[in-house]
Length: 170
Image 1: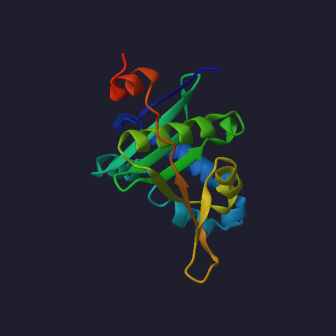
Image 2: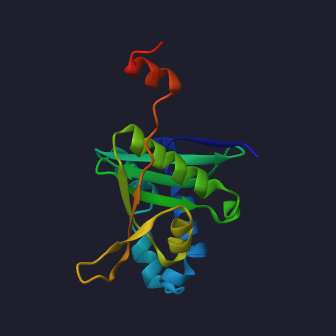
C-alpha cells in the first residue's frame, strides 16, 4: 500500500467531486437517512465547479490522499485553523487513509502556528474523531454543541541540540 498526501490540483476537480459525493452518499447514512433531498443539498457544492471554487478560495487549503496512485480521500483546512473537509472514498474506508489525512492536516495547522483546531463532525464521523483525540465543544449551559469539536494540537518539542543551544551548552 502506497499512500501520498499532497495539495489538490484544479485538473483533479472531477475526481475529487466523485470521491466527495460517493463518501456522502455511501458512507453517511446516519446523517442523511438515504433522503435524496438531503444528499442533494449536502453535495450541491461538491460538483467539479464547486471544487474549483473551493480551490480558488483564499485561506482554503485542500489536499488529497492518493492510495496506490488513486485519489482516495480529500481534506481541507482553513486560515482560521479549522478542518473543513475530511472525506474518504468508500473503497478506502478502514485502511488508515482518513487517520493519515487527519494527522497531515493537524501537522499542517501546527506548522502554521495553531495550537488548537476546530471542526464540525457528521454523526458518521463522530466516533472517528473521538478516537483521534477530538472533544465536543461545551455549550454555556454545560451541554455539548451539536457535533462542533476541538482538539489541542501537539506542538513539536525542541530537539536535544536546540535545548542545548538555548541553555548555552554545546
